[in-house]
Structures are given as structure tokens and as C-alpha cells.
Amino acid sequence: MAVAVAGLLSASCTPGGSPSPTPPPALSGTVTVFAAASLTAAFGELGSDFEKAHPGVTVRFNFAGSGTLVTQIGQGASADVFAAADQPTMTKLTAGGYAMGKPEAFAGNHIEIAVPPGNPRHIQSLPDLQNSNVLVDVCAPSVPCGDYANQVFAKANLHITPVSLEQDVKSVLAKVESAEVDAGVVYVTDVQAAGSKVVGVPIPPNQNVLATYPAVAIKGSPNQAGGAAFLAYLLSGPAQQVLGRYGFVKA
Amino acid sequence: MGLSRRNGVAPPPVLGILAIVGAGLLALPLLGLVAKAPWGSALSDLTSSDALQALKLSLICSLAATALALLLGLPLAWVQARLDFRGVNLLRGLTTLPMVLPPVVAGVALLYAFGRHGLAGEYLFSWFGFRLPFTTAGVILAETFVSMPFLVITVEAGLRSMNPRLEEAAATLGASRRRILGLVTLPVIAPSIYAGALLCWSRALGEFGATITFAGNFPGQTQTVPLAVFQLLETQPEAAVMLSLVLVLISLAVLVGLRDRYLSPDSQIRGRRGSVD
Image (cartoon, rainbow over all chains, first blue to last red; front, side, top):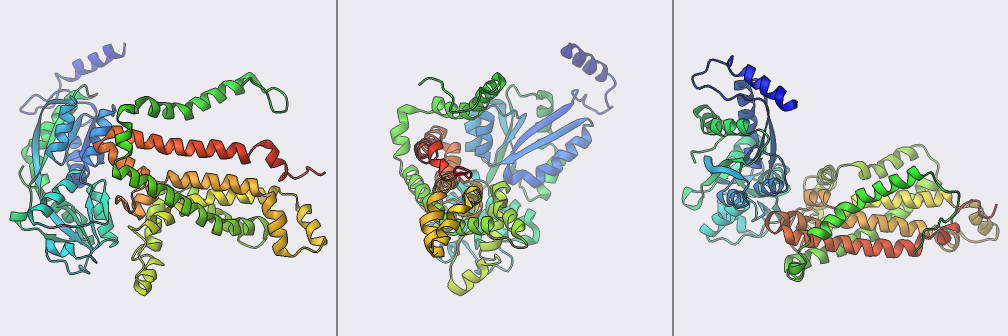
């Protein structure tokens, strides 16, 4: 019965669709996107742009550490799209057989040191983080931002003892913003999004890493068409422009 | 073990059915943990240095928090139960508030109070160089903050239901206030103190949100079992389940063991008003 009604509805909607160059699939309902915490601000804007382009569609986000999201999807959380902050986390998802198709990289990011306004400990470069009276906060090694931080430390040949290992990058940022720590290792985009609440101390390109953000549709998800459309939108020119404004680089 | 009622008339059957549903709701998730636990790798999961460190830290911090709650919470319960002054209701509200506060909010509030730039923390830091966030002491403080209200309300209820004539009789017989407290009041409300301390300890043992927000998450320093479980869920879910199960078993052993000992109906009679009327 419900299926019959849904069939009638989509049948009656498709012919009279909007006159865009490519015939859009009949999008409706809610598109659920699980995305890495560092995408929060940019995806918020992308979500409302997507909703504007597809009236009647609601985009719902679940932002958390990429690893947490993979666990949630593995436990049956219904997601249409998954966007991770690194390749290894994405591999965990694909290895689990939850992905539909191949993940595509849609953005890149770099790592930066975030310090509280005024930079009370005068941190100028990575080696300053080794100082024992500088409180440093990083992500846990199991989270992409923590993995990247360790890569950066290793490249600079530094041994740094953080005060805490956070479960996502926003927690690191929050501790820097409240000045409970003297420095945090976060993404360039986080520093930009935080505005005047933190100051960024750049890490030179030769010591930095390129964080790649892959996204993929989830197998058996409730809104397949919506998920596919959102994925396509992520790679489109307008979406790339929005991502660029938030400080992301080309993947 | 046959079914037998302790006292009173038989309840309507619907109560029994609802009770079974209630028990299922509470017990099923625990059975899930047991069913999903990877017993084969149990030993290696639990003897990893991070797991052992977390267990040790959890026990130390939860016991210290309970001790602190007893030291500060007993006098507080006494004040709330026995003194009548303007604002006692406000005080009562404030001291139970942490029970309803989302733990993460409690952590943020603790940062604003005891953080490096907090109301009190700023002076602790600039005068004494003493820093609570990201320290084991910070974990104990966070656990005390969220768990002490359980002790306070339990002990306060015990004090209120105590027969006042016992203390009055002791006073008529010339006992000093300190003697009355030590020889009459505290022994009479002992079951409430045990119950309150148990509740407080179990709440402290399971504390997560306030701890990770206020004290951070670092193995051996601030990473208690709930935090370790949270982190392990990402990398080794099997080990996380195993570690959760250990926490559940420890709590269960203590709660079942001590509850029966101190909270049996007989031990409560002493504190029940009207037993002499």
C-alpha cells in the first residue's frame, strides 16, 4: 500500500520536474550525512545550498571523529553518505563492506598549531611545543587529526608529550579557545573557522602533510538517490568553491 | 530459591509484568555485553598496559572521590537536614543540581570554576602554580562533583527519617554534642551513609563526560576506564567490550555484596522512625 502510494508520487513528480540541463533524479526525503568533525562549518553551508537546489530535501548531519562514525555505521546507524578526514579511516569502512562504489577525494587540508589569542607562550614553531611548560593538546592517534599530528612531529623529529588525547579535532580547538592549553594541533580550516578565538601558527610545507577527505555512499542506505546526488554535488564546482572559502585545498 | 513475599498483601499481577519488563530493560544491555564479549582474547585485552592503567586509575579516583564526598557531603547533609535557615531550599537545589546536569556541561562548568582561567582556578594557578585540568586531581574533582549529590541526598533522607527522640534522650542524659553525633546519630544513620557512599562510588566509577571535558584523556594520568573504553571503541571494539565488562563486574560485585549486607530490611529498622512508638 505504502509502496504503491510512493510509486504513484514519484511517477507523477518526475515528468513535471524542474527544467535543468541534466534530468535530476526524483529527490525527496532526508539525506543523512556522517561527516568528520573538521567539516562541520563547511558542510553546514553545503547542506543548506544543497537543500536550496533540491526543494523538499532535508540534509541531516552527524559530525564526530571519523573513527566514531565508522563504528556507528558498523553498528547499523543509517547514513547515506560518509565523509572521512583521512584515507585509513575510509579504508576501515570499505573493508567492512559498508561502502557502495569507490570513495572519492573531495577536499584536502593542512595541519596548523592553534594558540590562544595573544599567544601567551610565544609559540613560533613546532620545536616550541617540546618545552615542558607548554601544555599541548592533540587528537588521539586513532583519530585522523591525531595521526596527522604524529606524522608532522615525526617529520620534524620531535618528541612531544600532550596533556590529553582528544576524540575529535573540535575538542582540541575548544581547549585552545578556553586557553586551558597553550597550543593544539588542528587543521588550518579549524583555525580559520574559529576566527578571533584562536591564532594560527603555520607549520612549513616541508614538515606538513596533506590531509585528504574521501567521501562515499553507504550500501543499503535509506535514501540512495539523495546520497548519490550529495556526493556528486561535493565534487561540483560550486561546492568546491565553498570548501575553498573555508580553507580547504584541492584533494 | 522459592518466591516469597517479605510482607504485605499480594500486588496485582500487572505490577509483576511491568517489573519483568523493567528488569529486562535494565539487564538486557548488560547481557548484550556478555554475549558480545570476545572471551578468547580476554586475558590479552585486559592485561594490556593501557587497560591495567585505566583500571588502577579508575579505582583510585573513584575511591578518593567517595572519601572526599564523605568528608564534605556528610556535614552538608547534616546542615540541610537539621538547620532551618533562609535559603536552605536554594542550597538543597544547588547541591542536587549536578545530578541532573549533563556531565559534559558539568565539565565545562568545572573549567569555568577551576580551569586555568576559571573563577577560582586562576588564583590557584597564579598564586600556587596549582593546575587541576589534565591532572589526576582534576579527575577526582570531576568525579566528586557529579557523585557527591547522591551521598548528600541519601544521608539527608536518613537524617530526616531518624527518630529525634534518640538524640534528645542522649542529651537529657548529659551527653556532649560530639558524643551524641558519634554514639547516636552516626550509628543510627549508618545504613544511609553506606547506601549513599555506594551510590556515590558507583556514579564516580562510571563518570565520563565531566572527566573528559575537565581533566582530558591521557593514559596513566586522566584516562579512567570509561574514557579508555570510549577510545578503544574506535580501534579495538573487542577490547572495549571486555574492559566495559570488567567495570560492570566490579560494580556488580560491590553493589550486590554490600547492599545485602547493609541494606537488608533488618538493618534499616534501627533508623526507622516509629519503631518505638
